[in-house]
Image (cartoon, rainbow, N blue to C red):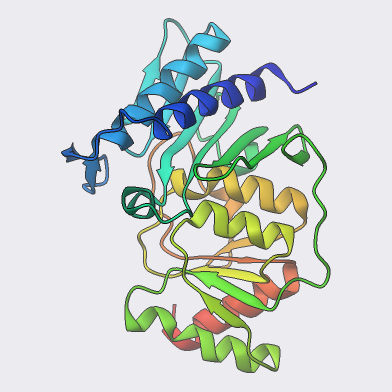
Length: 274
């Protein structure tokens, strides 16, 4: 049996998935999100479904941190939980029908200064496939079953490589590891990070300064519970990133294990001087 908060996250995510898989999705631009990015109808509606759904299922107030509408309290009274969500991670993929997109949400007991390390429950669900990754009180399941973690991990590096500078750490990492790893830029950070946790890739890197805590809180919680290591590029653990307000994550590396995370971090420092 999962905890009440995890059950609330699962039920809210299922409602968002039902909407995103329906024929009533709006792909019109409706404004800008909390970070100034373009918001489409499906982003805003999926976030509303998640925020209201979690509060309704819990029957208590939550502090909700969302990509579209920012920071707000849902419900009456003092919040019991911090809930942080990316309503459609990989929204460009979703918009054009590329099947690599997800809904990601995490929760931590409410306190000022709550961080990724405080997360006790997280759900990442694929939009185009019936796969749901759940973190509950230290345990991870995939569609309600314990996952098999691949060892050794697949020699593959995932990340966001939208500009030439983003590629610079890659050959440095190849040199450090003593050989090439396949390179993929797929477009959903949450799923990429989980795949590192599962050993389907050995690392993830993003040095674009575009990711936010809403993008990585749920997936990092799942991946690190599986044995991965996630670091900011100043060397601090991603578990220190706050989730009680909206913040950017300027640079992140996730390794299958500590050794690979440190090698990725070294490659970023050598290539970009960060």
